[in-house]
Length: 208
Image 1 (tube, helix red, strand yellow):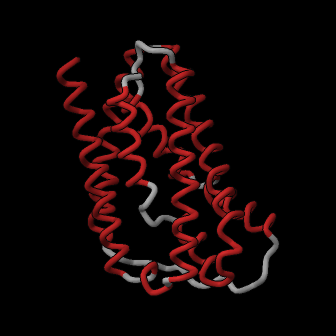
Image 2 (cartoon, one colour):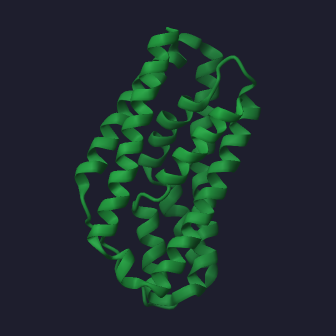
């Protein structure tokens, strides 16, 4: 994997994890109700959940690549279309936060497990990784090494993002519930998804 490709993945992932989805809303809900004490367990749960979803996705991608390079290329085309569609939906979503304070006291283990389940069992997460990861994989390079780098990078970003949201929610509650802020993140993420999809389609067309 080239440094340029890794930097592109890092930049794309850094913005994408900011998109307020079910996982972010869960982290914010705990932080609104229980403050900073919820940050570390929920962030760990998010990272473990993303690791679970990414691993399931990677196993399928590895089997597909080993079976047929042509099918893997077809998946990249389908993934590009999916990313464009998802990006357009996010762009039009506007600001619709629905994070309510989770005021019931919960032990750290329960918050961690809750965050892990919400993240890992979200079927959209697995679908997203199947569409997103192939855009940054070189079929001619070692599959396992590339995947290890991409997974580690994404998990660090997801963990840091969850901690950041928890910190902001516990100290600046109005900001994380502001529709304007949520709309801005949705448009940034949506625009990035569309760009990633179009960029993949362009690369496949030029090298196809």
